[in-house]
Length: 274
Image (tube, rainbow, N blue to C red; front, side):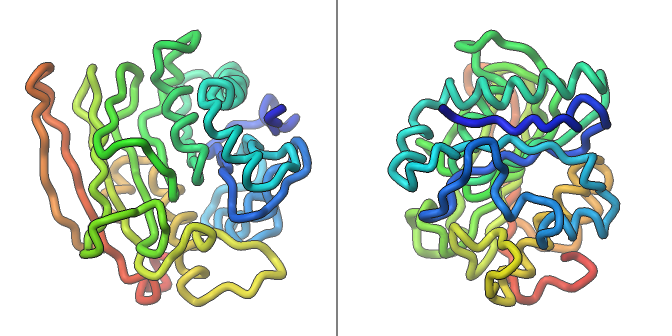
């Protein structure tokens, strides 16, 4: 059974971030444990602490933890609705404790699709959690264009490494071709492509030997997550990087959706931005 770590602190403190893990190579997790890279005392959490997000302001949803390795994790990923229910349970606990207070979910790898189901899919016992911004990191999707049927999402930040096999083709930059749309409001896609980062290199844990790019990527994602809590601060942060901008008008709804794409040389991200 997919495990859920809605720790006792969920109902006792206000949350800024919800970290939802995917599967990272052949990593095997104990039931109910968040992976080490999302645990206090490890580099990603240390960076969040450094920039003002305390451990108690972070909730984790521990998924893919049945101990069956990669094949078991892939099988669980196919059960999207079941995984989405695990995420939804945590969101309900958070909402009870902080109605109206914004928080940002970050979904890594196979947690991406279940997160969107939890936020917007009508096949669930739908509830609008008021989430405005969601972050996807190395999250595979079935198609180029993903439509969000309902909910309050205003923007999705979609992060991918150039060495992540989930990026398929084309081989030229930018390789991210993803576009999210909404049936109920304009939705912005912010694609961020990190050079020289593979699927297991967005985060790392104590005891690993990370590359300089991996250290930069982890710190950058932490800082971006903190900025995503406030749309104004997010824009000021992103102004430090060059982007290409396009838009798409849905012929059925008439809604205009914006797409921004950044290709970032990971090793050259300034220290103040990572």
